[in-house]
Image (tube, rainbow, N blue to C red):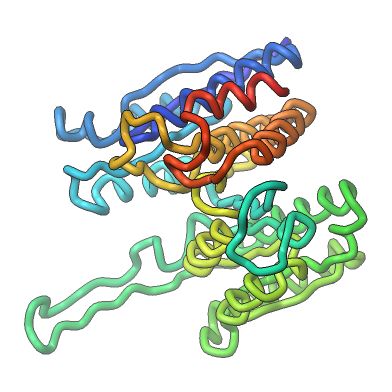
Length: 357
């Protein structure tokens, strides 16, 4: 039995609480499916930074490279200025570990309330692939004459063909996988989302690369395109149109938060920062929620879902499916996905999922 070595970064606020429930479920499913999981814990986050002034260094990152995957709780501390931990830890890990895919399933489970009228689990079941290492977040640009009336600031969206192509390839391959799972996915197109009518250089690069790859390597797939502003409308009006969406970094950051609301809120939304050839990192997307720390009311399902995604990426498909089915069952028993309104404590939700695998 092969063993997957997992680095666990509980992080800040409620992060350690939800990670504990994720680990609980992972241990339970590992026992059931005879999977080896070995967890190693690290204290990277706000408390460590406040005590030592250190966030993460090159030696730490090199150590993390040795793991099968990283399981992250949350980053964000109320006593640390916004941006310090996010850039110093999250973005640094994504860039230095070359986690060039941000994978965000948008799946509405039975019993989960969505603010989108007359839509249910059959209509909300798609995935967004956000390019995760390029674009405007790489920091190209600068500022001059800061603080006076002639101040100039620039931040540039930069993409090269290699970065675009490898993201597109991941998206097409995921579409191939989903098409085999269910005919309902195969009947839907893969979508590229961008803003080609205004961003005529980077947009043209993405659009040409998308169509060239589709025509050459995946001619059997239906392909479609949508502007990012139109996509925000269709997520609400017709989410059933979508299956696999691929987009660049900034646009993906925006539409995936909308997707989280469509699927029922931050309490159940999870994501993966993927390096298909290296170490990937999985996390709930709701943040550290410090006001709920220690109150045992935070929803751990997003962290449990992140653990499910991690197992799937590690090739443990049957175990991942078992978690998904148990999460779906738990959702039908909970009163709400909102913190403090679930009808269960944080630990009880974890027990509910672990006991029904």
